[in-house]
Amino acid sequence: SQQGEEDPQALSIQEGENATMNCSYKTSINNLQWYRQNSGRGLVHLILIRSNEREKHSGRLRVTLDTSKKSSSLLITASRAADTASYFCATVPYSGGYQKVTFGIGTKLQVIP
Amino acid sequence: NAGVTQTPKFRVLKTGQSMTLLCAQDMNHEYMYWYRQDPGMGLRLIHYSVGEGTTAKGEVPDGYNVSRLKKQNFLLGLESAAPSQTSVYFCASSLRQGAYGANVLTFGAGSRLTVL
Image (cartoon, each protein chain N blue to C red):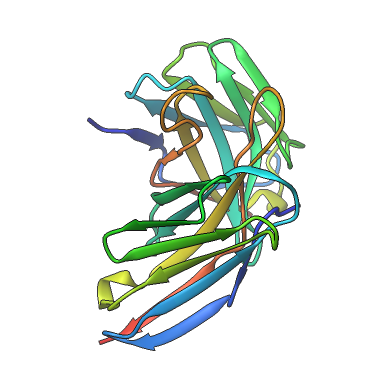
């Protein structure tokens, strides 16, 4: 079963606009990560936020985490056509031993030039 | 560095045939994983390994076997392929849990398998 669920499943915006994707999860986490997948390629890690962090930035990416609501959001500012991709959240649970990374279904982002 | 390399990239099988997908990483990562990706299902973990000589089942292990004889290689085998195993398969690797960046996965480019 999927731990994270992204919302929306698809998003279409104009170049220059901001894109916001949300992720909800069910169990307590050690950290939450966001990955990008370009069409026909493997996933690429974007950013990791730990359970004791509330916000993190990396370039045009801003990630927030609300552990009380078990949710996270990924904001891409000033989007570019090259940002067109699918975006996945992945959760790493709080548990002893091996911590399994579980992926959501993803948000498909289209940035129109 | 090549990162994570998967072979083959594409393969068509007939029902009942067997095959092996090979994953190789050159980053000295302890952990390796095999996922499958299907439309509307996201990525689902098939099997994983936390070190050389060890393997464990993930979410959807039935119909697959794995081996990790060398630290850098993780093999995924289909003994008797079924149409339900038509999918894109991704291998990934990560550092040992507890190390800086632990559980940040590096993915291969994927292997597209079609079972007729």
